[in-house]
Amino acid sequence: MQITTPPSIETRQSWTVATAALVTLMMSFGSAWIISVALKDVAAEAGGARTVPAIAAALVWLCLGFGGILMGRIADRIGTRPVVAFGGVSIGIGLAISTLGPSWPLWIGHAIFIGFFGLGSINAPLYIYISHWFDRRRGSALALISSGSYLAGALWPPLFERMIEHFGWRHTMLAWMAVELLVIVPLALIVFKAAPATAPETVKATGAKPTVLGMRPNTAYALLCFAPILCCIPMAMPQQHLVAFCSDLGYSRTFGAITLSVLLGTAFLSRQFWGVISDRIGGLLTIFIGATWQAVAMSGLLLTQSEIGLITVSAAFGLGFSGIIPAYVLAVRDLFPASEAYWRIPVMLLFTAVGMAIGGWLAGALYDHFGYYAPAFLTGVIANVLNVLLIGFLVLRQHRWRGSKPAFA
Image (tube, rainbow, N blue to C red; front, side, top):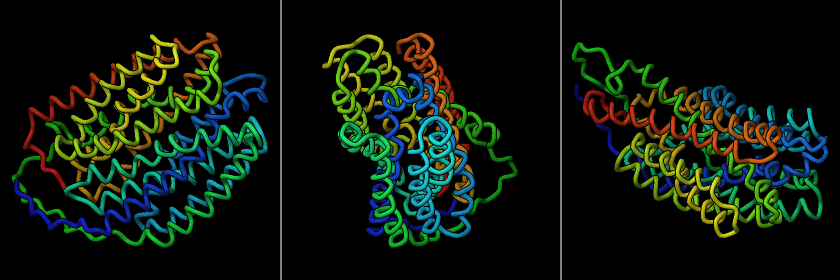
């Protein structure tokens, strides 16, 4: 089986577009971090139940996954520019509705407008869009833009904490609504023009049925979609509950917000490193290394309660998990044709969102049941270990069947 390799499509403009995508994701994901910083404030209005704001945060992740499938297909038909602009407007509407208070307005605003139509129109469509601007350094480009959510988490929680302290969580959401509309919509309309056309994939038939890792393509894809559920359950727990966890230990919300910023700031910086590594070793092996690291760091939350310990564990956690999600996208592009990216990438990202939703909700539910976070963190470690075993199986299959399935541009 032979493949014709097209010339590289990467140009200086490719990195300009990728930078604009990074800024767009950084701003749009800021809307999802407000509820994490204000978790205890919102819970206080809901009778003290942390499940209420935890469900809102979980619905964002779950619905952005489903929304990405629909909006990814629409973007493939009408272009990324109008879809991303629509997403920015939807996030603003969702923030406004959420200020009407817990429970249902908060859930509707976060699920339908911030999640499904907002981030669903931005996250998956931009992954697909940027993947078509790069070939040789696709892993680095995907790592860069996927850092947007973690850069948002590094920059905005301390700001949100101060704003919530002085103005309340409702006014903070309304202020961020204005920022979303002023930044995301113009940027989308100006920068995100049509991606360069790629040469069609031509493969000379050998008579053998196509396989991926020695399996039927959809069997390998199903395993690749199930794996991120297991790794994103523990990934979501510290991100959504770290501020509240630090508060339970007697530390101020300011310290909790700083700890979250350390976690996500480390994730942003290290993700660029993981992008370079993934260009060299591929998506699957990058996932395996990052997931193993994440499991070790997650265990640290069960062993420390000191300020230095929490900062150290948070930094280690950010360093470990940061390269996992873009590596999943890279693995899909490595193993499947580019012509299938418009549906395979959003569906795979849906399963990462399902894992994030389950992790955020489960941590809140287990806390409400037990009164402390240790059972939730232990559950996250177990899910993480299962993920490492599954990805390890796929890595072994890749090593055994290396060369049996071509890489697509």
